[in-house]
Image (tube, rainbow, N blue to C red; front, side, top):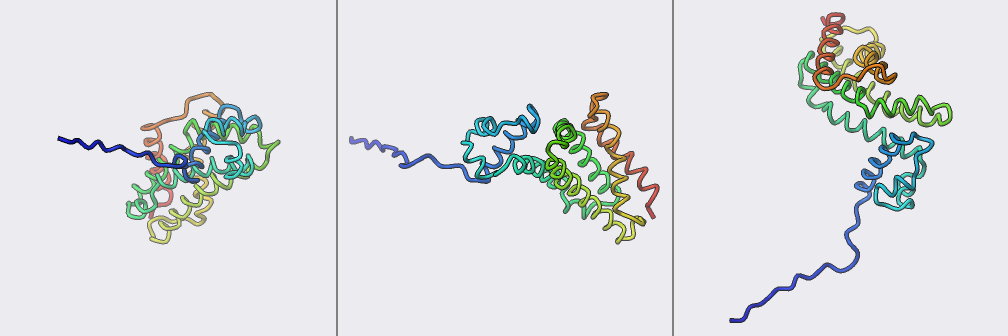
Length: 215
């Protein structure tokens, strides 16, 4: 009997190269860790590249400046928030369900240790690097506010709530949800609420808000 042994041939050429989108994600995570550990000014592009397993040339090709990298860190986090909110689900939820879901997700974002650390960084270094304050405001505050304000305007148009100024009301709603616990956490006076505490706070805020504007 003759036995044929098949020899598995290795593919020729260089190993498969990671696509730019995957590389960006790895670099953004490495940058996030570096900003958390060392702040903005002391963050090392070389260390970011090393931790991401890429060259500094690759980092600069995808993120020409440190400010671009910081913006991408914030944008990536807000992108995950927008996915978690799920606008499609909000559109089919009842008024109360939608409001509680939106507030809970917003609380999970803004009261996380990651966000609080970044806010400390922005406040502490924005005098020297005003671009990081602009980036945080545009990528984090404006984008989250726009989503929540648009939802409120939709409820007004449906006749479910009455608001003379949805923009101002949105700011008040966001402040009611996170300002006090976030401020205490930033000043290291109390741990930020997590999980069920955030959900319970969202329910309480929804109750107060709807009693003021529900038709």
